[in-house]
Amino acid sequence: MANLPLNNIVFRCYAHRQGSGPWYSVCLDLNLAVEAETLQAVKEKMNDVIGSYIEAVMDTDNPDSIQDLLPRRAPWLDWLKYYWIKQKIRFQNTLPRPSNDHTFKCFAPVKFAPAR
Image 1 (spheres, helix red, strand yellow):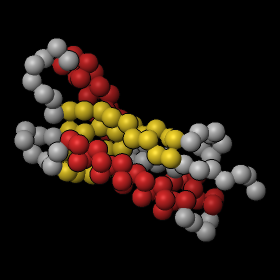
Image 2 (cartoon, rainbow, N blue to C red; image 1 turned 30 degrees about the vertical axis):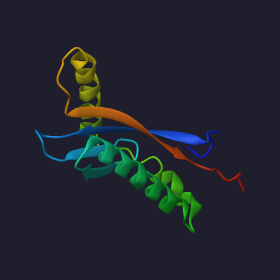
Image 3 (spheres, helix red, strand yellow; image 1 turned 135 degrees about the vertical axis):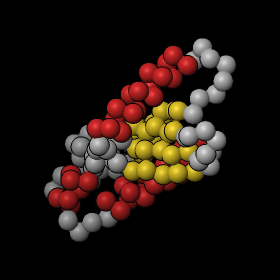
Image 4 (cartoon, helix red, strand yellow; image 1 turned 180 degrees about the vertical axis):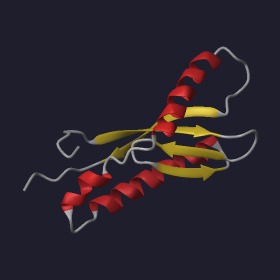
């Protein structure tokens, strides 16, 4: 991953809520989860958590450990749920009611140091 010539890395996420309860979100590429009361709040919280996680990973005395922590994939059941939600959204676009399922992407700026 450190060889990618990118300024931003895209992380795939989904958000779900049961009824009118809080939103629950998972970042599939880093296996992070957050909860918030609104969809917008859960997206913002996920973005903050991703930024904090990347900052913590990069602030290490052992650069070899970075490749073990970026990426850190979520379990396959979370991936299955993500793709189920994507298909569900595709078919729900014709329905008048709002959905309790969303997928979204977070973009994290990453600066890669030159190889030593």
